[in-house]
Image (cartoon, rainbow, N blue to C red):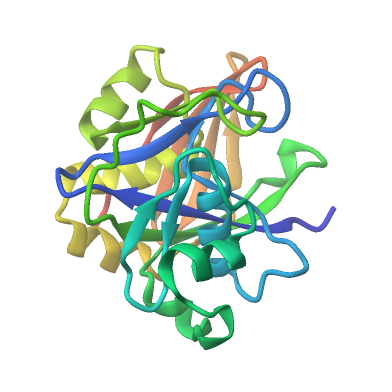
Length: 236
């Protein structure tokens, strides 16, 4: 099956915390912490448009692609992304130049492995430096997210290793680089990475040894469809 195009936004606060949303117990990526994002719609003019639209629809954080300023719309008073841009940012959608990622840095692209089954995506990740760490205490769970939280890369990875924070390989990969290197160095490494995992070997305990290309490999363990472990050593 041809992977469906999707996009996600890695939102980083001034304190270098990253915004995650906890997916519900039903649907895609159930009970997993993911970055805001989703499948690309027919009306999305580019992958970064998809990432910004989904971020707004899922978290209420509305970003002006031209100025990179953002506001938090509590309760999603205006649900349509294009109208919200006009209402809250005085920005006409037609005035936005979406070419070249609209100036949002790329943070790797991942395609779901063939072994994962019929539901596959090619996801482009972008990074956005938020001007503030928005207060998310107002958020109430929805069909898209059980909760929102800010968490540092080091804390997220530590919680993941302890089994209290579930991620998939792309999130673990990005958080590992943001933990060990400056943002500039991590982005320089990630911007052109197009990762289509290939199986090197499989073990009886659900661990799969993947070739991620460009001399990078990952050991990923799945239990009942959930990713419980990702071992990756950055090679910059």
